[in-house]
Amino acid sequence: MTTAVSDLSDVLSRYEVVMGLEVHVELGTRTKMFCSCPTTFGAEPNTQICPVCLGMPGALPVVNAVGVESAIKIGLALGCNIAQWCRFARKNYFYPDMPKNFQTSQYDEPICFDGSIDVEVDGKPVTIGIERAHMEEDTGKSLHVGGATGRIHGATHSLLDFNRAGIPLVEIVTKPIVGAGADAPAIARAYVAAIRDIVRALGVSDARMDQGSIRADVNVSLMPIGATEFGTRTETKNVNSLRSVERTVRFEMRRQAEVLDGGGVIHQETRHFNEATGETMGGRVKETATDYRYFPEPDLVPLAPERAWVDKLRAELPELPAAKRARLQSEWNLSELDMQAIDNAGAFDLIEATVSAGASPESARKWWLGELSRYANEHDAELAELTATPAHVAELQSLVDGGRLTDKLARTVLSGVLAGEGTPAEVMAARNLEVVNDTGALTAAVDEAIAANPDVAAKVRDGKVAAAGVLVGAVMKATRGQADAKSVRELIVARLGAQ
Image (cartoon, rainbow, N blue to C red; front, top):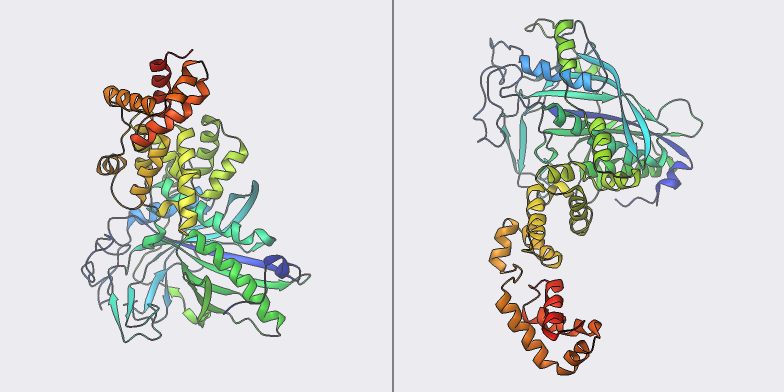
């Protein structure tokens, strides 16, 4: 569909948007939440399973202690209260990829609750309330074969992989986000990015959205301006990139406004985001908590984290992203506008990693906010998705600093890296792009240029040094741009005895 609502200002002239975000974080434990099966990503289908995670009769679960510790760390980093007593529950529903026909989760007694974090959008701080962060297990994975979209509609058959079933998750649920206005899409993106950065800093997850180890369910509703009750929400499931989170909110705001303006009704349903079209598609009618028939998990004892343990984990928390951002802004001597540009490009972690790999903050910013941002925009990609890594950028700058590449040659080398041709040094060697530093070869090229342009050479001898640009150009052409222009100019002036 193509919505008739052209922009968000049109929507917001009549409606107020309300958002809720549920971020699912796969924990980086070696084994699953309730059994000893490994959690290696990309293993052969159905090779990391056992009677417990397959829900076989008589198989009893055991709680993964590292999973509990990771959940507490996440809660502490989000400013949550840590429950003195909590327990698991069975969430009952049927999907083919959920072998037990229920999910072991937490319901009314989560391990972490009532927190908040601050994010920045265009330099403005926004506080996002956290309702809860609870532990649960992931489901398996369905692969629908034969259709054009990869979804069940149109597929000829489906395959099931239960390797992911039982992998520990922490689900982080926000309180309703009201009053975001036109910033709502950007706030949603900034929040998910902040959660990703926090769990990475804690070391509890690799938080790779491309592999599904962090993903977001995006809830959106509209209510007429002046109304006191929230509108009916939709929940777009498993959105797996920051850009897609932003696009989901924007599209749902427009779509729902169009439906409401036409006298239609918004149904409480799950939806799916289509990366190709930037639109959401209807899924199933959304269940309520009652439909899930929650009841306490009888095979697991309640958890009562000792206060001394919680205090120890609190004291051991690493530097969190907000504090690190402030520290590095000071160390890098950047203005708030500079940091805003970095944040808008999603380049902070990449620049930090590039500096850690040996580049200066200035050169790291130059490459990520310049050439690489342009390339990402042209190819509709996130910076972190590019073939070029922080190590590549640091190596590229090292080649420039060492006089082996000019900036112009470095850009050519970078294009080769982005094309998957190898590291900067490998691309430079394969394409024969290294700066010509052979004094003999350069002198010969300079002498040829002087001989071919006697009138220009005479002007330079007479003190008109600016005329040397013609000779520099001739030498650069002869060396295929691989000479250092400054060195060439100095050699020309010296050969012609100009003052």
